[in-house]
Image 1: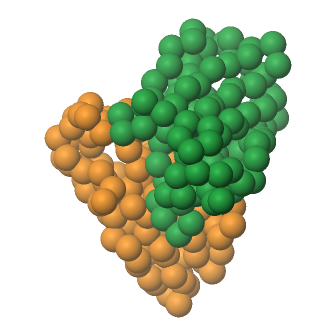
Image 2 (image 1 turned 30 degrees about the vertical axis):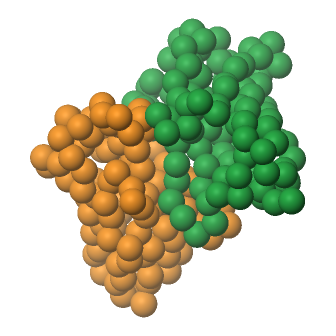
Image 3 (image 1 turned 90 degrees about the vertical axis):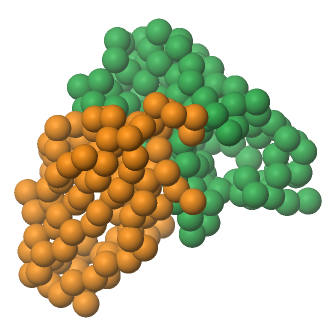
Length: 121
Length: 112
C-alpha cells in the first residue's frame, strides 16, 4: 500500500525559509521509474507544480520558483525534502507531495493528505 | 491565469452526462503530451481519475472517460451521481517556459 505524508511547520514568518518533508511507504525512490513531486494549492485556487526528484536523483523545478526551491531525497529514510526560501504571504497554501510512476505515465497516482502552511508575522 | 483553460463550473442532474473541457496550446496538449484528470472532493487531496492513454486506475468507475483532440481534451462523466460533486482538474506537460507540469484552473461540478 502506497502512502505519502507531508510534515513541517503550519506557520512561517515572511522572509523565512520553509522546510517540508514527505515521508512515504509502499515504494522505493531508488526503483527505476519512480519520482516524487511537490505541488501546492492556495486557498480556493488551482494546483501549482513546484518541483520533482527522480529515482536517479535528477531534479526539476518550476521555472517561476526555481531560484527559491531546493529538493533532495534520503532514500534510506524514504523521505523527500523541499525547501522554499524567502517566504511571502502569497505562498500561503496547502502543500502536497505526490508520487509519479512511469507505469502510470506522468500522472500523480498517489498523493499525501497535504499540509496547510500559512505565511504571516 | 492557468496554462490550461477549464470552465469554472458545470452542472447536471442525477443520471445525466456532463463534459469538462481543457484547452491548451501547441506546447502542451497540442504537442501530444498526455492529459490527466483529477477529482478533488472538499477538504481532500486530489485523486487520479484518468492516467496515460485515457486509462482509469483501479477503482475508478467506467462512468469516467476522457478524450483528446488537437490542443484540447475533455472529461466525460455519465450517469451523474451526487457524490460526483467536486472540483476537477486537468494536467499535462509543457515544453515551453512555464515549467514541466501544468494544471488547469479547475472546474466545479454541481449535481443539481
